[in-house]
Length: 126
Image (tube, rainbow, N blue to C red):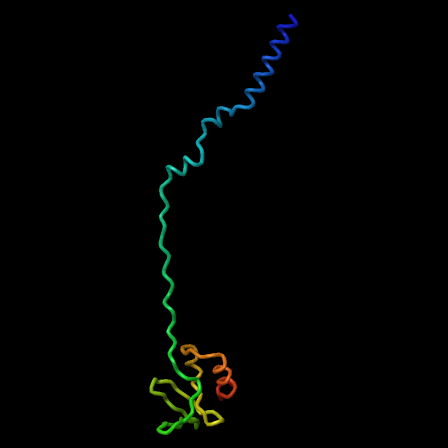
C-alpha cells in the first residue's frame, strides 16, 4: 500500500510539474501580433511636400557713391534721394554717400560688414 501511495503521489507531482510548463489553452489559441499585422490594410504613405526653392536675393549695393551722370533729386521733406536703374531708393547720408532705403533690406543679399556700415552711417538707422 505504501508503494502504491508513493507511486500515486509521484505520478500526481509529475503531472502538476509538467502541466505547469505548458501554455494554457487560452494562450495557445490566442492570435499573435504578427498575424494581426499580416491581415491589416496596408498603410498609405503620402509623399512629403518638396522644400521651397531657394529665395532669390537681388544684387544691389547698400551704399553707393555719386559718380559722373548721377541723378539726385530732392524729396518734398527736404532730403535728397536717388532712384537706381533697378528701382531701389537711396537716401543721402551725412557723408555725401547714398544709403539704400530700409524697406529694401529684406530682399537684398549683403555681407555683415556692409550692413554694419549701412547701420552706422545711415540717417534712417538712428
